[in-house]
Image (cartoon, rainbow, N blue to C red; front, side):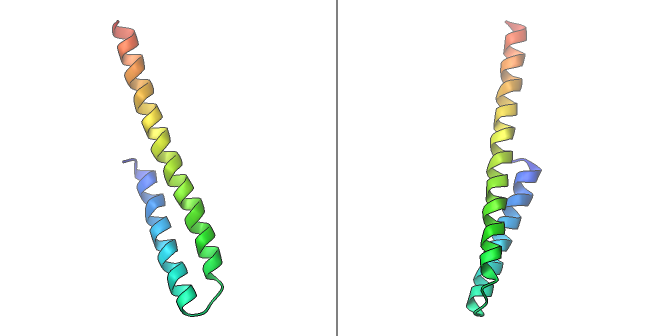
Length: 67
């Protein structure tokens, strides 16, 4: 798993935890934490898909050059 994907996944988990705590205390600030969690989860998916596409492109270029 790419390092940036792990970092953004950690931010997503922490933002969800912060949102839960915020809502439990009765604060509406949790809405902002939910938005941050959404953005970071999208970033994690982007980095995962980008790494997978890069791996497949490398694999195709190495097999294309050999054959």
